[in-house]
Image (cartoon, rainbow, N blue to C red; front, side):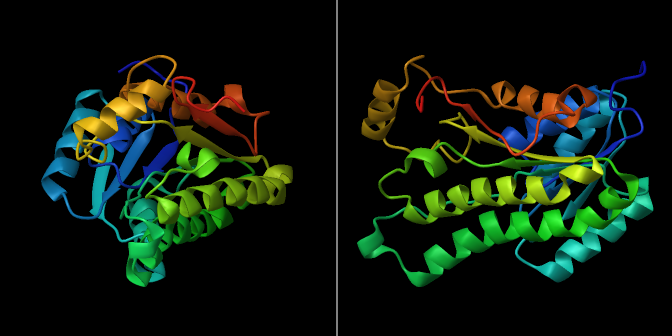
Length: 251
């Protein structure tokens, strides 16, 4: 494999067993990064992604992780250091939904989505910062959602968690900018993944009617923005949120 722009860098990607996380792992591996991917439940899928990354000529390791647990997060950082020496690029991609109207939503449904999506982003970001600050270089890229920008009925917990990630991104970016660390967010629209496969035909028709480009995104249309933000070409970009949504949100 020829030298790539991310040679010598290590990327840690959470929730990378499928969908957007898988596409990100492949793109960063293609650019020469060492890749460390985590999964929560689908070990076989995660190992399949690792095999795909290795086929590109990149190094890749896999480990199970519950991003809600600070102990689990600390363990992962030790594993990454043992394998590659530390994290240069963090992609906070792990997330889940528990959709229902607020009147029917349980406290557990609300708390679990917030804990995974928002608390997980906080724990992971905090864990990698010490080494990034010491190196005076780092990239933290948070996967949020246009739902966090515009809202969506039946997803108040998910929207709150993703809006929180946008605010977290802006605040952390201001805290660490002087040390050469950038923090940005990407807000995908509706992407063809397992998360959207459960929608009814009626829901799909309604969503498509709101998207100016008239189709869902592919995961491979999200990952190139991550790859750009991970590299030196994005060194002067921080605190930003990029909507990748086919024109769904224009303000």
